[in-house]
Image (cartoon, rainbow, N blue to C red; front, side, top):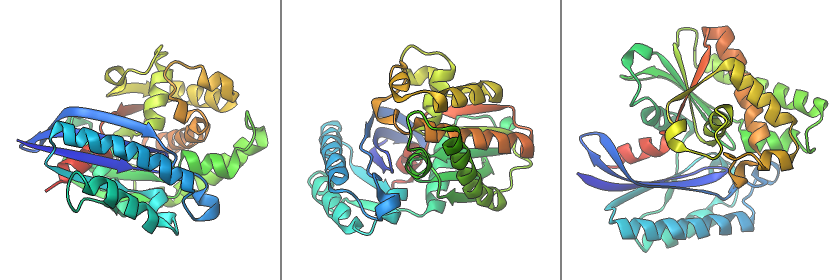
Amino acid sequence: MTRVAAIDCGTNSIRLLVADRTDGALSDVRREMRIVRLGQGVDATGAFAPEAIERTRVALEEYAAIIADTGAGAVRMVATSATRDASNRDEFFAMTRDVLGRVIPGAEAEVITGDEEARLSFAGAVGELAASEAPFVVVDLGGGSTELVAGTNDGVDAAFSADIGCVRVTERALPSDPPTADEVDAARAFTRERLDIAFERVPTESVRTWVGVAGTFTTLAAVADDLPEYDPERVHLSRVSLTRLRQVCDDLVAMPRAERAALGPMHPGRVDVIGGGAIVASVLADELESRAGITELVVSEHDILDGIALSIA
């Protein structure tokens, strides 16, 4: 048994998994998530905002303390879409070296490619699904990018990272509260343009099961199930019909901010961007129904974070 720590730093959130790994299987010790919005304004400015780096530093200090307290012997931190795009990313990396290096000498964040991000997400997402449900398409809907990965329990057949996500759509196309009909139409057109490229690179006509991972999908599943508060055990491997998914997505897009914030399962850090995420999810639903005859979404709590933990040497 080896105790490892995995950190996923995305555009909207930073997450930690401390787990015991035995023969390729993981047993959770601790899971944490903080909304830090590292990608705040990156789409427009090309650089990290100082306050975004500071929010991330505060969360990472908490994680470093947890890693020390739980006795993890190895750590891998990956940074994804926002970090690939930021001109001042050296400042971010210096911060991660300082914070993590106090716990594990030499530890720091690493930027991974969209392709590796997709493969790690796939590895984490399909581990508990039966081979009879394959082929799968796993979709990791993040803040700045969305990864599509097709494959089976034996591995990945095709993967692509599209420059579309809940933060990017919100900042680019949804300025009003609630969005106007024209803004929603523009957001859907922008999303389709970016996802068309992904579907060209990742054939989905033969897939049998759509698996959604990350915070937009888990939130949509909790709202679809009318949960009074977020419950990861209820959400994990839950299934949402596409009819119900579209209804929830349309409702969230149309809601004013105050109404979204009042929903029991809604994390405060997702209130401002869940509408953008819902638009991406509804476009994905349309495409996968028409291309593969998919009728439901399977939502997994296990994703890139689990894939990172499994990848640690």
